[in-house]
Image (cartoon, rainbow, N blue to C red; front, side, top):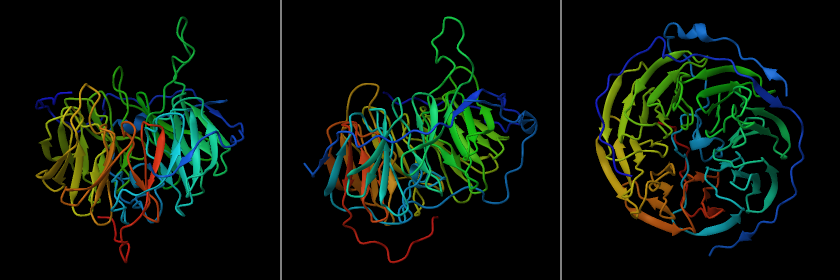
Length: 460
């Protein structure tokens, strides 16, 4: 895919974004299901009732001020496990421990389908959760053996999130957000039904896949994107708290929701719009781009939010909705952004000559760039979100089949070839083990060989 030339646009603060909070007939299934016995898989050595959401449309008639107190979970991943997509609700991809400095494989777990989404790791490091395109969600022990698997009925494209009580939330391609117990039983399932199928349509015409990873608010509320809507559910029983409709037609949501330090929720759409919402889904501001927004944004501790689109432009906006800077990386961006404690903003390109670019988060100036192997076609590039460990080392995967580790200066430390494209992002367990899935149906665990920091640094 060739880089797109950005065109200037007008950026607006909106009282009403032309987007309404609409009710929908989300259905929840509270029936229990028993986890399956371990399916044949190999451990290889190295080599119901309708729910009506509250009417919150009045909240969008005027811009609501930002919340004044932090209300979302913003823990750094690593020593506390990797319990949510990108390690924390700000989606920084930042860890407070070091990852492996060599490509030593501890174990490989094989499924029967692609592993497209990032894994999750419990705070004690004893359980690794990962979803597969084989229609199963897996719980693994730290040694790579299977604890249980759950039949989701369809592919899993998004990463799970682990609640404080151990409940695991994961979206599926059969139009459902699932809540599973740590033992692998279904607590509930929320069906993302927007409307009944019309005459002549398929039975699932009004239902939509859950392609984004859930965001957990401090009170446990689950926020996720589905088709044109952002949905918030109560964790205990999947009752709808609110639904925000981001547009019509092609305004689908593929970027996972992000939290800011004051409770704002950020996300982008394929309708070329980026939204900042309050916790109650009131529009704070919106921004327009010249391309789809598939890449998950990242929020800084000062409230700055960084986002990028298919127009190849990376943008930094303040909490108040004012653009601080923009810069072009010359090609579409679809991988999640990453933000390190040294002020580095990592952005990856999606084209036939893909690069990982490190920018200054303060002004967008380029620090360095690292090129992976070139490829062909419209579906090539870097889809894997980078992880930045405590010392600044960078880990990510590419569609060239490789997993990479780079130094803080962007030099290659090690690489490991898998059997297919690496679209999933890496995650770190509390002991420094790096877990990453590949389209070759395998989850790889790389051993921890780097010294760990003597004290856990704060996230900056």
